[in-house]
Image 1 (cartoon, rainbow, N blue to C red):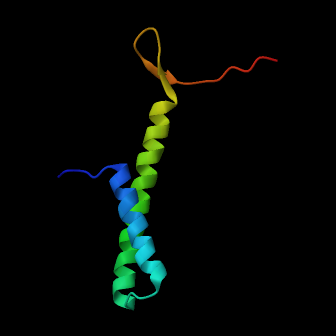
Image 2 (tube, rainbow, N blue to C red):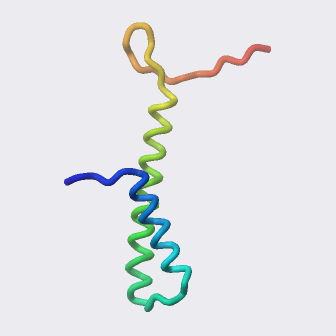
Length: 74
């Protein structure tokens, strides 16, 4: 199965929200579209969290991924 990109899911989510905001969607269709939108939002959130975790790691001199820590100087 070919997984959709974050950007593609976000665009689909935006389109669903626009459709639902019109108020011209029959209730049964609105429920289906709302459920689909929630699944897309969950997938986008998971992908964003995963990307954040990756960005917050750095490659140490020994080649091991370690958590990135900002050291504040007083």
